[in-house]
Image (cartoon, rainbow, N blue to C red; front, side, top):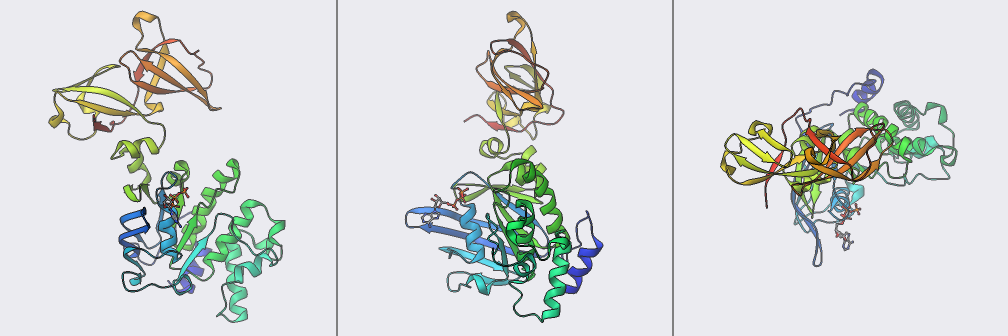
Length: 376
Ligand code: ATP
């Protein structure tokens, strides 16, 4: 995309997404990429494509290969196998490898890595070595406006808050108009309140800039809230990729279900058009997808805390009893052990206080289909 087009976008768009040059064009492509360190396989046959202007987040537990994937895209690691292309050019494969400075890739590091002895404007201008002085000044002003820091042009990084420093780092990485921007745990240095605020802010900035971006995190809430698509990684591979609602509501495996939010599994026997569970009998249509092939068999039904409500009752009517109460401020999450042996979680308003040991009836209040998995 030309600088001219980007400049127009920054001034024309506020909360709306920028119209990217070609939203169907794949800007970054990883094809069967692997990376091993001796016997340690960090990434295994990973393939993915990121479209122009898209924000994809790699999400997964510690050691699943997120950082290694990011470092291979940046050129800081060489793949052991497979091919990486950016803007239709191969930048790494079995026979070729472009160094980081030969790739048009921007990186925002966890600690922002701002130059402490340079002003905000000088930090942003740092990578613009091939532009005329006037053009640099214009580009810096444009970026300061984009990240809403025009008033801080001459300040030193130490005079800025954490959130402001992050916006400078973002502006500096966007300045040379990278084909792809990489964000390595971009919110990990911020306190919880600022983190939530900056998620929205960073997404807005990336969208206004129209840049193609990959972010890495192990924070599922962050991934779900900022991304166009999320790739959940496990053991060096992608367990599932899709838009945030799709992966959260229809996790394809127990791993994905458990990684994205609190998950409990209700054991259920499928009997024709019913399922029999520790909470009673339900129409089989409660489950998403066809289940006929499992008639007579046991399946595990995914239930999240907001799908269930516990009601205090007496022993004879109870489905189980409260074994733990977790206070989250606005809500309580009760862990309930059912007589069937399943353990489930129920989310309640902060004023609904039950004591551990309380016998409860548990109601399934979900107003959506439930994901399920064949019992292993
Ligand atoms: P985290 O969230 O903790 O940063 P991650 O998902 O980013 O984890 P990676 O840093 O990509 O995971 O590591 C993936 C695997 O590769 C891990 O088992 C790690 O120990 C291993 N690994 C990463 N870098 C190296 C290295 N330079 N030498 C040897 N093993 C490495």
